[in-house]
Length: 207
Image (cartoon, rainbow, N blue to C red; front, side, top):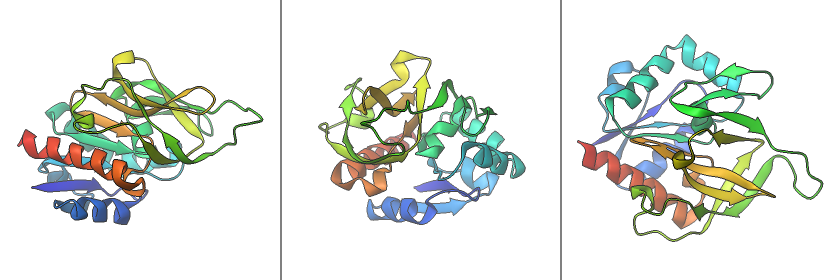
């Protein structure tokens, strides 16, 4: 079974691929349409600015490929900026259209004296839909975040887990075969790796 990690020029490709391999699966870092569409599961990583990322995706035509993955029902996981790209739009450095796979907006954290932006460090997850297969066999715990913008999903049922940063902040989303994690599971200790493993198991079961 092969997991395609989408290479569009922005993302923690090495750390994500190594994490997939440590869990016993084959990782393929690729920007090739057929390799992505032929994979059992697809991971969309991302580090940097939303607008730049969308420009890279459009220039490589990988925006349409990722949308096709979601339409085909192949398990898709967005990580960090990759999760934000799944949504409708972002206000990061202007207004930018996203992939529109999930409805919702990406907004900047509210400025509060006691909470620094970016939100950086270990924060505890609160599962909102414990029946999600992503949480199979898991308990709530801490994961590692680094971000200045967060997602406000339009559909409540898509909000699978939150973390508290002065107010509830979206941490994990899911709709059908599409999932997103705002934190970096590959850098989030045992719980992060367990969450990633549950996604990979979903991909394995889908084929």
